[in-house]
Amino acid sequence: MTDTTTRAGFVALIGEPNAGKSTLLNLMVGAKVSIVTHKVQTTRARIRGIAMHEGSQIVFVDTPGIFRPRRRLDRSMVAAAWGGASDADLVLLLIEAHRGLTEGTQAIIDQLKELGQNMPVALVINKIDRVKAEVLLALSQKMNEAYPFVQTFMISAEKGYGCADLRNWLAGALPEGPWLYPEDQIADLPMRMIAAEITREKLTLRLHEEIPYQLTVETEAWEEKSDGSARVEQVVYVARQGHKGIVLGKGGETIKAVGQAARGELEEFMGRRVHLFLQVRVRENWQNEAERYDEMGLNYKDGDG
Image (cartoon, rainbow, N blue to C red):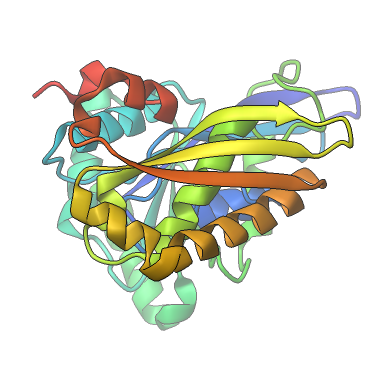
């Protein structure tokens, strides 16, 4: 590749929930553009992160984890994941080394076969530090017997092992062409949505059981102040009255801690001061309101049963 050749394209990250897609995206981009928590199904929209490497612009699409959908929101998320894969130039299927070829991964492979093999799919075995070398080799062989992957990479997205090789391959495998975004841009999501995702991550980390899946966060107002800071107003929508008290916490301590953590991360991300104001509102039926899906970057109609 000469110095004047540029490449650009979309790389979709697919896999089961918690396979490490968001962690890999954030590592590749070098900034936090996708929320990473220990809870599954946290990525709701297709979040694009942009990495530059040796004249190539790699646009990562971090799709929601593919799982068996039960509710409208689940169905919209799974549809977004497959939409991200079918629109991409390259697809990376992430699996966890210690879990191997699970039922869920087999279902994804079956779906890939149905889509046809025009689209190059590479296998990325993540969390390799959790298993022994012989287990990895056996898993790689088993996976490549199950599907004709164009390449296989063994990585630890958390520790960075093997990620340089993956980045080099992606940079060379994308089609030649002009860059799709400005060189200094790291995500194509509006800041309002990134801010809402950051707050939702902090709520997910603080709350337990089903509540994180029963809430959403929207940035209602964004005001640029004359001193260079930003005033950001957000609403946390919960499905039940009982959830509101849990999100607020005793004397408002939970929502206060969430606000402080989210503000700190937003300030670091934006490189300036942020004044963040959070409200909690009950909307029992928010998961069936098209407007909420638009705010999350999902298609409401994809959730039709």
